Image 1 (cartoon, rainbow, N blue to C red):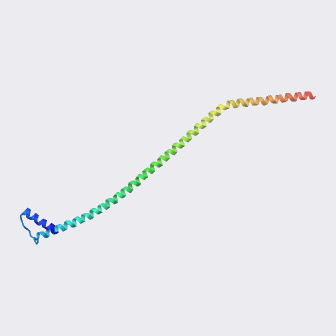
Image 2: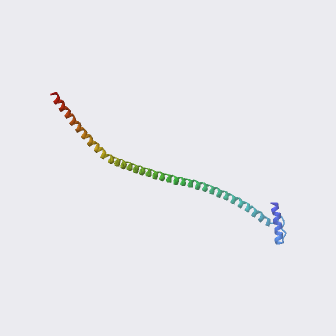
Length: 145
């Protein structure tokens, strides 16, 4: 405080051309002003610290809120992608099943004609066998008689 007082006395003498002694009442005002400035600086520092804490808290809260919103967006996008994939897979499976059914139906149609011809041929063979057995039985009956 002494250095400040000496400096103030020199400044008053230099600017105003007046010599002020150490016991002059004007120095009381300087002391009061100095004290008020210190108190004000302390109060401002306290307010600044509180403001900083509030800003830190807001920053943490915004960070948390932003992270939660981002997670919700990502989860919603993943769910939509899963649903889309499931729908696409189901549609693909249905298309594959329809294609397989169509291929099988076409193959059966192609086999139907030869199978019918084979059935007719088998029936004719059975009829021919019956005539042959009948003829053999007739020959046997004639020989044994």
